[in-house]
Image (tube, rainbow, N blue to C red):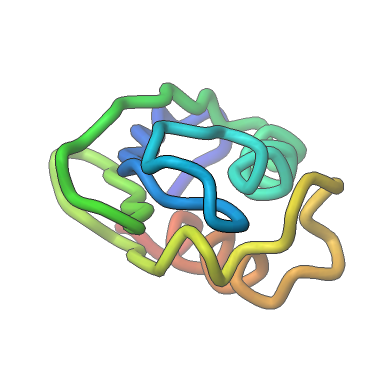
Length: 93
């Protein structure tokens, strides 16, 4: 995938530390930063599916994980799932 690709990041609601189920983006910050560092444009899109994150490139899901498995905040450089997501987007073609 060339740089400057459009990546749609679908994310669902989840419960954090016993709080109510809501849409939260704190755990997405590292993945957003990692993809933006590669020059990709990331658009956030809510989905009804709980606990899920999907990356969509050219209408195809190229990466999926549980949102609760992502590290909270940060730049994504130390999160192995962010590394997997970057590779999946770069390999989308």
